[in-house]
Amino acid sequence: MFFWKPTNNLVYSYKTAEYWCTCLKNDTIEWKSYRRAMKLFEQYRTCGDINPSIIYTYKEDSINILPDWSRRLLLDFLLKKKKEENSVSTISMYRSSCLRFLKFLEQKKISRCAGISPEIIKEFHVSDLHSTAEARNAYSIRIRGFLDYLSVLGYVPETLPLALSTECAVKTEIVETLTDEEVDAVYHYRTIAEKPMALRNTAMVLIGLRMGLRASDITGLKLTDIAWDERTISTHQQKSGRFLKLPMPVDVGNSLYQYITNGRPPMVSEYVFISHRVPYSRLGTGSCCSALNNILDKQKHGFHLTRKTFATRLLISKTNTDTIADSLGHKDNSTVMKYLATDGDTMRQCSLSLKGIDVKGGLLS
Image 1: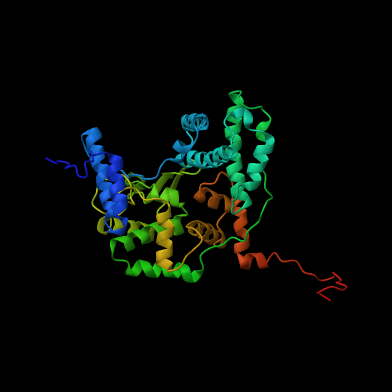
Image 2 (image 1 turned 60 degrees about the horizontal axis):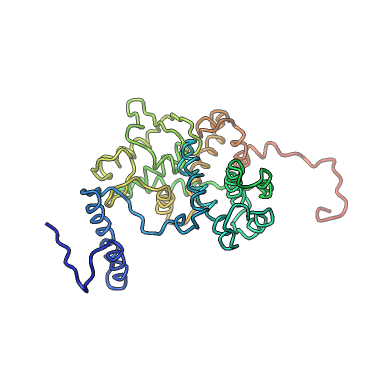
């Protein structure tokens, strides 16, 4: 039986134990292990049992820091979005967007919905920093949804959400893909991969490169999604919710088999890709990008590069755009058109001659 021996005249409490673990930061690198042990002990005290598979968070929930009036509204709004069967990622986006807005209102000493004016909304929109106009637009759309919710409840005027702009100029970007040398590096890595982490890296990156799946769909892949007899992989896309069933290339199947049999920890989990440390939980989407960076030994701009490379290579091989859209899980081929510029050889056949066009003056004269 475990006994807690009080010292310094302190009675045990979780907050005291957590503070003790934090004080050990400068004394030992094991302080995080002690902190997790305290969480497990607290779970045992409250539930009478221990579930080591739970991933704990140690940060104060930002929603709890909000004033009562805004915290209650936000929690009710997020619950509504959950009942509407929005995805976890979508609800998380609503959460972070609205938190920014409500924290701004708190800074402005606004303590009720009646104090939210068009001027306040515009001031927030100007001061809220984002790396791109698209990112600002994505946040604004979610905040406008929250304002719409308040207007339905009668807390703000129906026209108030219109004070928040949700438009941004259309921007065309050059599609970045993996180079031939980088693709070759992936296959070379596959030939030398032996350790569990290397086998996992290979399988995840090859699925993205050869099947075009997003990181969220790869980390959400379940063992039952793989039909070995049919040589297919099925998934409900996290982003769109569309069902997708794709043929599994031989190299992908071999890499998956190698990882599952020789690299994956022998733990009971429905997910294919799991962490290799306790609590052996499902991986986050960032692990796919880390796998790509480890293989190429350089920092790349996101795992989405593999999906773009997959689409580009299908296009270069003269695959029909509708087939490419189906493979990517898109509802139409409009998004495939942005990859046309990556096919340099075909684009050259579309060039127009300047014969007969007189150029007078300027740089071309």
